[in-house]
Image (tube, rainbow over all chains, first blue to last red; front, side):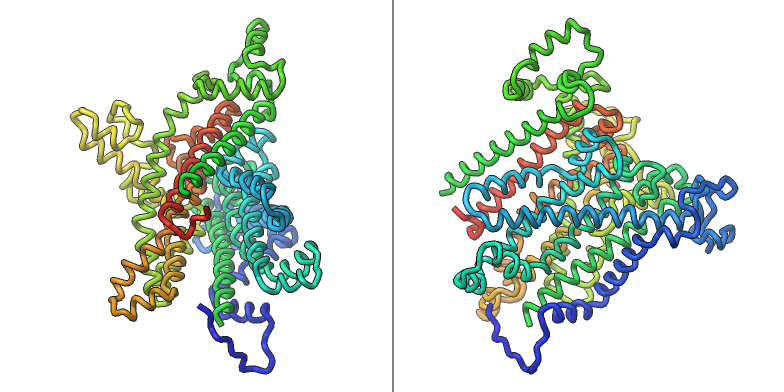
Length: 297
Length: 339
């Protein structure tokens, strides 16, 4: 339904400022945004911040409970694991593994996806159709299965599974970018630019991209939550990150044996994954709602 | 028109299967180790056997010829042997597949039964506290890592309270003859004297894995149904129907639901691939003897023929479900028909 737009103010905010305004009005989403920034900071600065060496085993301090319990130690705020390693340091380092690598995987996938999506979105006919169907095939292979196949070929390891995650995320980016571009191509202002003599490349760079980048951000957040969960799940199954690595998923797998004695060694890494994914999803939902509100007003 | 559409879908299906088999075939060369071993699954091949096998697989001929031979073996059911058990991979998959299908279908059913009504309620009570509660819970369920959630439930319901078992499909006390491979129907069909006890036991085993597996699809259903319903409720025809004097419930039922639930059929197909991934993780945690734990064992043991076979079967299943729901969606929704 078309609504009449009235502009009361002399100075109207730009689209980004409007989006930001609508975004910050949602407190949960803003809170998620702050959490994400903190996590990002932690992922980047973790080598300078960890109170202990995350891999240093201390046989004197096995399974020390968190410091809020009576037998806990202040110098080990979140306790130690079954090899006497400081859990807090390991969790902090885990941020750069689970969260940081997930961001890198999504970024890599996004870049390739934007290139392929732009190629497919700007082209027509058989070429575009064949390409799409090949992508549909990739979309149907479950991500874990893809990871298993890649690990079988390349051998287990965190970096090898990153390839699998990138590959599994790629189709949704290509589809999303392609749909966004084709939606823009129908707009009147694109036709106007075309009549003005803009080439395909100019159209893409100066007309379409500035109008779809918010959708790209939205796709990025959605993919990021999947990527974090995938990295952790593969670590948990010991297909991805291998045992001593302080990756949250593999930390849970390592501590399964001591789940009776030291439930915190399982609960805390899981909580970190949960908080991270929740923050990402809050931001994603926030952007979506903000975009919708901006469209309506 | 519809015929033309189905023909095109069928053509696409064929194309996708060709691409899939090419991928599976190339894995025989990509996997580490001997090509002959990867394709046949045999270990310790003697030189005399090797010559015969090479002849059979056409390894001295072109890749195309080998690919055709590969397809013939697939179609004949003459699949490679599993490295670990030296059994035909296809037979093993047929053995473990029903357990996965059973778990996944109950979880999917649960997610539809719980998710769709909650999504509708949330949409109708938009921005009221009930909507906020449902949406909040859905967001939490959407963000929780499934293996951690499974461990939490095991800790509460199995270790602390001791209500539910943690692994397997049925207690070893009961022996049920395998007919379909699906546990609940098998128990109902069997003639054993302890039928009812076995049924209760099977349901107790099923409960935790099904709830764990259903969590993610349920939240997806809630969120998706809510969005779709909100879109529909904004349409002009809803206002028209209200203006004509229909009650809210009538409008909701005759105009709202039908239009809002159409995209949901499509969503089921799109989520199926994720559901299989989650089912694999769930199976590992609950030692559920399905294709997921079988495949994960396969990767631990470097059982390449098993991975190749599992890839073929699981991907075919997902492709088939995707195609089926898409055709169903097109048949139900005239707007989606782009003939």
